[in-house]
Length: 391
Image 1 (cartoon, rainbow, N blue to C red):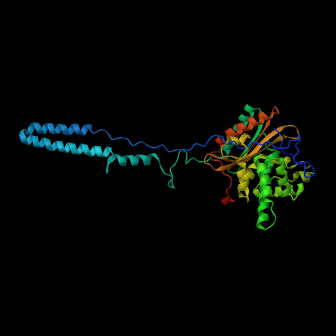
Image 2: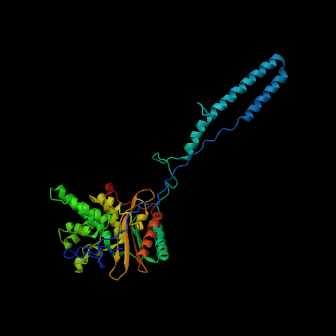
């Protein structure tokens, strides 16, 4: 796997990684994954009516007694009358069994079916657990700590995982703040889309076609050259300006990350080196849908190339972006951020990270895969990311 984007500025060849990687290999959405099962309300079979044997036997007994006592024609007439009555009763019961008009068991069936599918206050059928209270942040934190510990132990990795809680991001594991690598291409693309729309709205030149093509490549394929051109467009050709513009964009989304800190410290390496906490990535993804044009970026995040099958790709319907590469201390890092569907289909923000203890990339992949497979168990009842109408 090629190293991921450590851009070294406009004056250098774009996106030369530490080991000279040219294109980023970023885990992408796998169309496979566990479907969230629906909760079909089981239908109730309408029980059949009991056979009317007792009633027939009783009537027959009465007929025999009448015939014995009366004798002759009077007895025969009485027998005929009672037999007609028995026949009428039997026909009526058969009509009921067949669901004829006024049949007793049609009404019983309707009542039974209604009892089997109770309605909620708004008239919808309630499935199992419909009235269950969402988990508390304390309960979620306990489950998150357990997940991080299990994945770390079983997969020989250090991990970090963050999800959204009722009172803000929840985090577990040793890892949180590391280099952003290609995950930073999400806010860069968001800032590009916003700038294009502003220019178009004010009748200014806007390289829509070129930037659309570069956003496709940067998100779908994690192409570094394309991402560099997006960065330069945001910064009007200057790394420093781009860093401050992306920082301002992230702040408006609700993420406090200082994307310009490298320039403030005088040690600019590239936008892939921006330090980005998992917890702040959750804040970013929580507010991202509020930004003008973000829906186009998210749509791209839902169609990452098929051969990138790691991590959040294991959750069907996930919209995400990944990044990876060697940190300055030599540790290999693999991370992702995104929106993934919970049990009710609502999209909730998550961010994950793995650093293999043996330094091998496949170990990192197995670590994020394990997180991706287990996360859906934690997301039932998790808060959804802000929708446009909530911004």
